Image 1: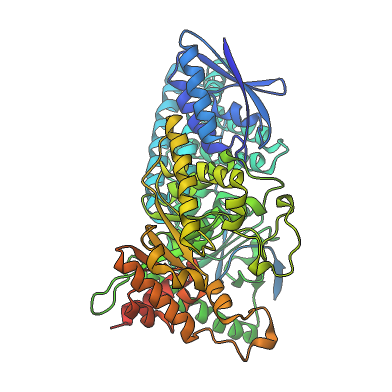
Image 2: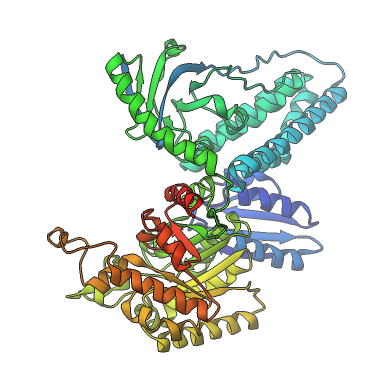
Length: 85
Length: 537
C-alpha cells in the first residue's frame, strides 16, 4: 500500500466538481483509492461518500492506494490533488 | 399591500404578475413487483435517460450561461452514477420487491438527509442536488417529461426553492424575477440568476395566496412588494424603464464587434478584482480581461497566499475565460491598500511610497511565489502578466531577470508554461515620458489613468477642496496617453487603457483617434462603451 497526506487548499474543500472529477479518475484504476479524514474513510470513486466526508479547506486527508498499479496511481493522485484541490 | 425583504442576489427591477410555483413532486406509490430483475432494468433505463437529459441541459446551459454555471449538470450526471446510490436502489428493489420509483425515492431521501445534516453550509446545500437528480429519475420512471412551462405571459416566479435544472429550462423571455423562501447566495440558482441578469431575492417569506397578484421585485434594496398602490407602481415603472434601457443595450450589442463606422476596431476588455466577477464579465460580453487585480488574494488572506492557492485562482480565471486573454497584474499592495502581515512601515506620503513593484523588487520571495503561480497557470489558457508602478527601464530589466530565472526554475522541474505576454502599467509621468525606451522591453502597455492623473496633476482626488482645480480631461494626461500609444506603435506593441478614463464615453472617440488598441473597463461599462464605438465615424 502507498499513501500520502495532503492539506486541502481549495476554498470550498472537496466540493462537487473536483469530487466528481476525482471519482471519474479513480474509476479508471485497478487499485482501490481511499480518502481518510479524522478516522472516516471513503473510496475515491464514490462521489457522494467523498462529499459526505465534508472535507474543508485546511483539512489534512490521507490518501491511500492499494493494488497492482499502486505506485503509478499514487503518483497520479498526488498530481491530481495538487492541481485540483 | 404586503412588503417583504429578502437577500438580494442580483440588481434590477421587475414588475409583473406573480406566478407561485408549487413543486409538482411526483407522488410515489409503493407497489410490489414480482420480477425484480426487470424492475432493475427499468431503473437502469430511466437512469440512462436522465443522464442524457443532463447532457442536453449541460449543452444548453453552456451556450446560455457559460461553463462555470453549466458544470453542475455534469456533476449531477456523475452523482447519478454513484456506486452507493445505485447499490441502494438495486438493494431496495431486490430485497423489498418494490417498484423502482419507490426504491429511488427512499434512496434519494436518505442521501439528501445525510447532506442536510452536515455542518458546512456548502455541503448542506448539496442536499438539493440529490433531491433534484432523484426527482429527475422518478419523473422518467413515471413517464413524465420535465416540463417547466411557466405560461405565455412574463411572470415573477415565487417558489419555496428552485433547482438549477428548473431555472435553466424556463423560457428566459417570460422570466421577470425569482423570489424564493430557501436558497442562499451560494446556491446554483443564485449564481445562474446573476449570470442571466435576472433580479432575484432569496430568504423571502412567501405566500401561496399571492399567485396572480402584481408584484415588484427591487433587486437594489432586496424588497418584494405585493399588490402595490398606484403611486408606488408608477415610481417603480420609472425605475424599471431606466433599468430596461441598460438591458436593451445588452440585447442589441451582445456579440457585436467593437468597430467604428469606418471600420476601425478596438478591443473591449473587463477590469475585475475577484474571480467572483467572472459571471459579469461573460454576461457583458467582454473580449477578455484587461486588468485582473491580484490583490484580493492578499487582502482576503491572513498571511501570504501560497503558490498553490494563487495558482488555483489564476487557473480558474484563465480556464473560465477559455482562450480569451486574461491580463493579471502582479500585486499592488501599499498606498491605500494595506495588509497587516506585510508589516509595512507607516509612511508620511504612501502614494509616493513603498508599494507595488517596489515591494516586489525588494522582497523577491513574495514576487517569485506569485510569478511561479502565474506561469504555472499560463499553461491552462491565455495569460498575460502586467507589472504596476514602473518608472524606469532599469526596473523592467530587473523584473525580466527575475521572471527569466523563475521560468528556468519551472522548466527544470518539468512544469509546462504557456506563451505569456508581459507588459507594464503606464501610470507614472516617468513611464509615459520614457515610453519610447520602455516599449523596446515589453509586449504591451496598459495606461492606468487614475494614478497617472493623480501623479501628473499632483492632485489627490479624495480631497474635495481640490475639486475646482481637478480636470479629469486635463490635456497633460491626454498628451501622455497619446505619447505612450505612439511610442508603443513605433515598436510594434499594443497599448491599452485600464483606468477609469477608459470607460469615459466622452473620450472614447478621442482614444480611437489616438489609435489606442484596447480599453479595459468594469463589466457593466462594456456595452455602453461598445455603443459609442459603433456610433463613431
